[in-house]
Length: 168
Image (cartoon, rainbow, N blue to C red):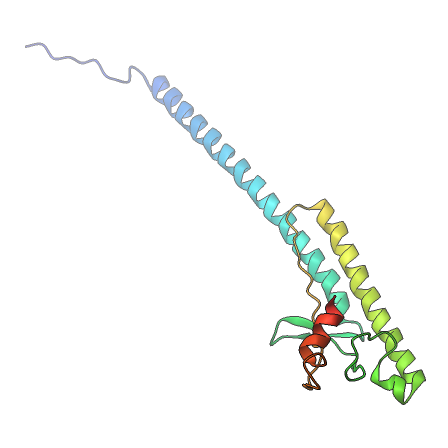
């Protein structure tokens, strides 16, 4: 019987050429995966910058004298104490202080107006940020209580009717 002395690798040069080709393929695959991850990280960095911009805009509310952050309910609350006259649905110029001290009532109205301007400015700045980024969405909820003291004079003069007439 005759032995076959032929080898898969005819020479040392063929082995080195094959190893080079394998390394080249591995480099190309690794480089492609790196570029994909780099793009993903770039998107995350931009989203993070948008979030920081939103927080910095909202932070301006906390630094004002008109609002405080309530960490229990995760909301910003107005620090200006507002009380309206009892049993009134048209609350324009009907602060409780209007009955006793007109100057104090006017100062409170100005504080309320400045607090509203601050919220309006913050919303406007957030909208500007939102136009540059598709990822920013926010919801502003303004709430209040119409009356803490229940009253029921008759079927048409009560808290429920007062709240209905005030909201319409």
